[in-house]
Amino acid sequence: MPPPSDILFRLWHDRGDYPGHVLATLQASIAGFLIGNVVAVAAGVLFALSPPMLRLFRGINIAAFALPPIAIAPILALTMSGMAPRITLAALGVYFVTMTATVIGIAQADSRAEDVIRAYGGSRWKVLRLVQFRGAVPSILAGLRVAAPNAVLGAILAEFGGGGRWGLGTYLLGSLGRGEPDRLWGIGLVATLIAGLSYAGFALLSRKVLGATKAVTLNTAVPTGKPESGTMFARIVMALATVALPFLLWWALIKLSGAPSMIAKTPGDVFAYLFLAPSADLAQTKLLAALAQTLPITFAGMIAGLSFAFVLAILSKLSPRFTQALMPVALITQTMPLVALTPLLVLILGRGTSLTLWITISVTFFPAFVTLAQGIALVPRSAEDLPRAYGATRWTTMRMVVIPASLPYLFAATRLTVPRALLGVMIAEWLATGRGVGNLLAYLALSSALTVSAGSVSVPVLHAASVRFDLGFEGILGRRRFLGAPPY
Image (spheres, rainbow, N blue to C red):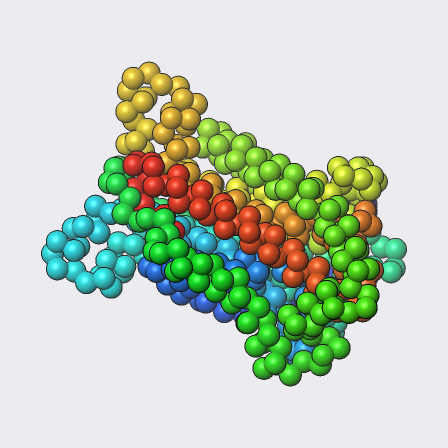
């Protein structure tokens, strides 16, 4: 790792190179950020108001977030032209985060205020506009805080994997073979600065909005939402539709785009490759062996990243200055291109499991932390006054009131963590360890059939875990009166 003085000197020496590359990355990331968030907020409102639609589109939502950018960036570059691949990957990076934040924000609306609007003859639109959406603004802004760095990272990954003349990703790719780590770190720090400024802007806006939308007291009403209901036949149909919809959309996008069959494989092609082709046995063996290496450490990294985010979120309440001091480091781990960071980690940690866990935690904890910290910040101060009046310590108040009241945000954070854990493990396998699905994607980059196969098997695994998790989430919320929000 070069000393900071060398990095700063190199930044100054290369200052003439950066404006064009930074401008190209900003154009793609801003366009993707706007498009992805408009779609995400609209989808979040729809899903919050119609739980069956949320269940129906669950597979698409998980697939959109779980698709590894390192795998789809070359495909997007080959099937799209101009800035479209960069904008698409940036939009995909922000969609799931903002959509989840919108859903949980609307679902956490104060039912007492909704009852007042209805009692005075207010329409469904009035309830949504005056109570639910207004109350969801802090959660949406928290989602935007995570989405902004994601958009920058998505644009850089698309530039890195898709060619082009301008962009920080292109600049990084062109600098890899020169043996100039100071330049690589300089590019990474510029990307971190862009992401950090965008995060800080939405954090400041969120702080100003929070005071105008935060509830004064906890809602003690019984949640009105219910877990999935209906006949057994209806549930089976819904489950089948949920699983089938991502594959139908996959097939439709390939057909409508006119992408050559050598690059873009339909679900039927993947099924044939895995089960009908003469080499199906070999493909299954390789894929299952890779998944057996990737999935266990994925779940371990998910638990570690979520635990770290949970502890950090609690510290943000108990010791805000400590958390603020860690935020620059957190932003660097979130946005620093791992191509620049991985060689240092290899020297420190080697190429084993510890390296994979470190990278996985670094890419998973940040969105979970922001979501959890926002949930803790939304707990009304008056709810904390009662235990304090009886002599409770700050930790007792946190354990008895704040943490239970912010449980929905814990589940939302877990939704964000699961796919990112897989991405972190695959990046580590691709760049350093040479194992698992990440290595399979890198080693067989020209074999698009097996590449898509790896992704298509990983996504249903995550989807099944998410479905089971959602059912548990609904059951818990249905039993906790003090949460006062319908499960979704």
